[in-house]
Length: 82
Image 1 (cartoon, rainbow, N blue to C red):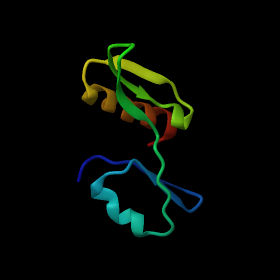
Image 2: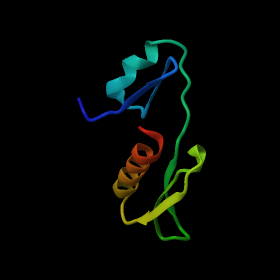
Image 3: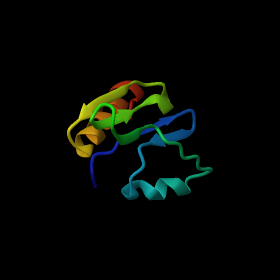
């Protein structure tokens, strides 16, 4: 299994979705929400990770989408405990 952080707080399980963790979706009522948008930004001429859905900044630009995904995960770890 890959490296995943699962946060349990006040009876709620919070995690960044991965198919490896899909069974956690069966542990009760499920709510899924987007935490970012990793997309190509034509104005910045690179990939950005827009963290505004979780009150965060726009990260980047990055040369590759993979770099944007890494930055997204690092920001979530540092700022949201995920």
